[in-house]
Amino acid sequence: MRNPENETELTKPKNVTVIKLDVTNPEQISEVVNQVTAEYSVDVVLNNAGYGVVGILELSLREIFQRDELGTFST
Image (cartoon, rainbow, N blue to C red):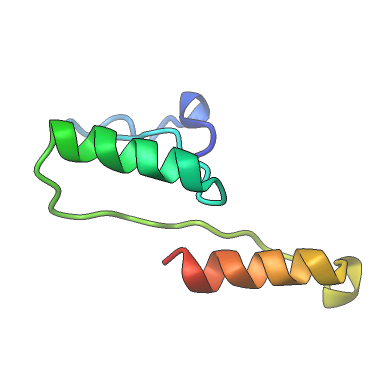
């Protein structure tokens, strides 16, 4: 989650850990994986990365590729 400090619901259950992570940053991904596997035995990883767009014409070609890469390759 990019801004876990703003989260109010997922931080309530004792068996859920919310960690700051930008899934577009490979170095941060490695750091979080190392941190989590050092501390926990992982049963489930929830990746809910993504964002909505009102219309395709509102995006540049680069933004379209970034959106598709995030949705396709980060899951």
